[in-house]
Image 1 (cartoon, each protein chain N blue to C red):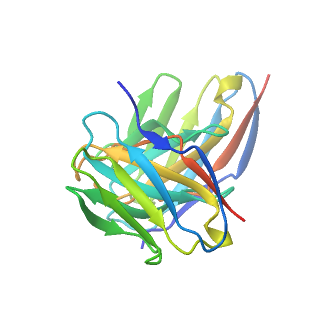
Image 2 (image 1 turned 45 degrees about the horizontal axis):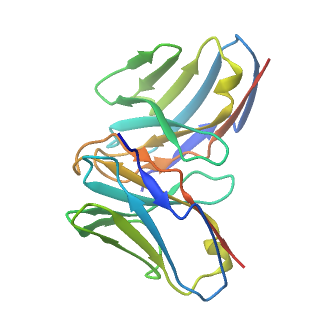
Length: 111
Length: 113
């Protein structure tokens, strides 16, 4: 089955700096890659996603890039704010099928 | 528009007991998936329900079973609870089996003692 690896496991940045989280996947058939933000005591919140026919997608301060050849995708958060502090999960799936999640990145934005 | 709602939010059970968790999908969504999230880990897929049938199943024993009702709501049942079943159980809903976006509820925190 699919195997998703996520790095780093923890990340601390100063407010206003950028944060980058990277994931790799193993199954070349995977074609949908969502990113979720999970705050303490809450369920995962979909923040951005990308499909395999697109190389990059941006939504305000958040962007995701996908390299199908290398089987890796990344989340970029610019101008970080304290409210960006949370655990971020990447996932990979074949559309309509189960999500395979990474192990999460705990992001701390220092004011 | 109500999102995905799960009940109860917290639950404490004794080893060997049985538990039922409930999920109401986002309005208009007809597909429900269940995930187990152990502390400090990413969610692990349990199974997916669509048209009241289990369509996919992850690597979980038969002690884990589910049901989907005509109104698309769903239940997750776990029998013969083990200490290792302690986790956050998440429900995700989506529209149609081939629609990719999935939205999660807040989860049910199950503690087995």
